[in-house]
Length: 432
Image 1 (cartoon, rainbow, N blue to C red):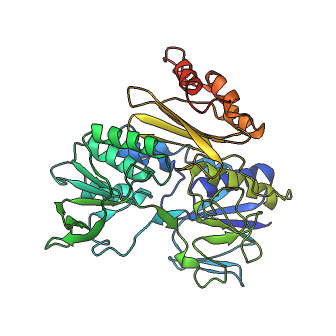
Image 2 (cartoon, rainbow, N blue to C red):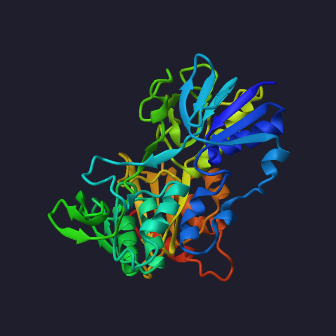
Image 3 (cartoon, one colour):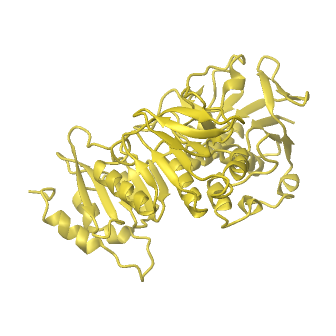
């Protein structure tokens, strides 16, 4: 019986295992040291905030794995010996494989800051990070202030988590507006105002230079590049993530920032595949980045690879880009491509409600008026509608005229689409 070994029990690895089992009787082994059972990583913040317990983040009963003949091994992988098709574990055990799936995920970026490895300095990626957070910042008596470095999605989650326990937060971002490397400036400035409205000390165009330790080796302060010293008991490193691949350096598998894969998600070594955050596409699809640390991307890769390994070769084809997140009380969705500044030959239409919590930005082609993408804030939209509009190359005029058809909000929600249409009609964006 063919033995498929999967390193990593996140959404990518577990999805691959589940779909391989649906399609075949192959032997499946999942190896992970992070947790004994699969859990929803996106729910870690809600465990800290007291909305749920950790066991509530596990979507499957503990006996699910045995019932589906998926063997779970709770251990670290030390090295991979591809010539012998063997995985070496820290416990001393070796596991042979016929095919190997690398689904090892990400770790927080570190950029060589002095003091970055002190106690009380960490990211928020793993279950272990959550457990360490409960030690370093359980309340505002132990942690009198937290400093968060980096204005991305994990950073704003961590700020909300700290605020839920009344821990004061200073938030350092190097951009002029929150996430302005991704969001157009009007959107970024709105999010900056919203973050500050939650009593977060958001410092724009500010970076960390050094982390200072106390006599016990714990963080006691951050020094900024402008020379300010900020006393704190916790530092959150949220300046992005990078693939977890260091254990593969002598494996013979081609590595760059991530594990290099082709469109069938196979690495440079036969019978070895990589999916999820750790995979780097040799030939990225469309405008997509070579590495995508996104939950649904990992899930889709797992599904595609399961088909390939079960006799139905399936290329990685993720379709139109989309994503969603939450900035405190503002829900964010994006479909298609909206660049921080319009691409050459494109323009942006912006609308923002007076409440500073709802906004829309649409990117479109000036010549053809083709709809390229949309950002929505505070307005829930239907994925399938925008996916269809992008596939059908709808014009910006058609999209604005029919935004109400894409609304996912309940009936009692006051819909702003008439106001958006009026703003569009009275702007320079209307067709001449």
